[in-house]
Length: 192
Image (cartoon, rainbow, N blue to C red; front, side, top):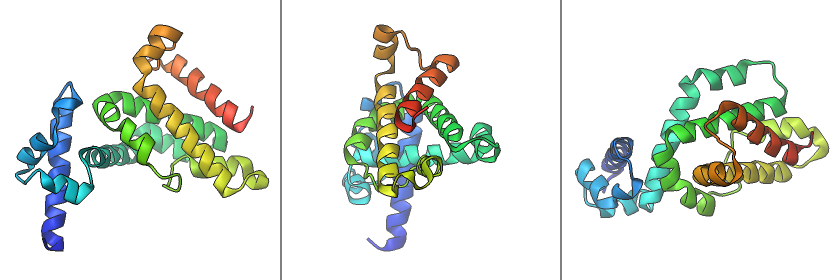
């Protein structure tokens, strides 16, 4: 397959997966076959282009997240506000969790994949704020690990948010409880 056709196929798969995931209640129903059928390609193209169904859904989620961070007034405000790096980190995580709750089907479908496959070296929106917070007191590698740990913790928490509400009484859909939860974790990792 030539490069141009490969890019067309990748985009068709991305669009099909987004359409199907947006319109479903159960991400398990969005199979490789249904995605390929919607895209008008052979199901094997998912593995060829993305490596797996989960990687494709992760690519869709990343696209939605990127678009949301560009257009969401909250993310724009965070970048422009005169907040400390720690305060910006708190706000970024709060807004990210809200976005993942809004797109819970994607989060549910990809969290296990992300937790097991994402590289620590992958760029994190949190990293620059963590590095700014610590200055020269921590190395970039230490800051990367903190960014990875925070993101992983919050992704896992999101996946189990109903059980956390049920057993711990913390409702991540409530703005005040979400803020307290995120602030507590960031204080544990960055210090008060």
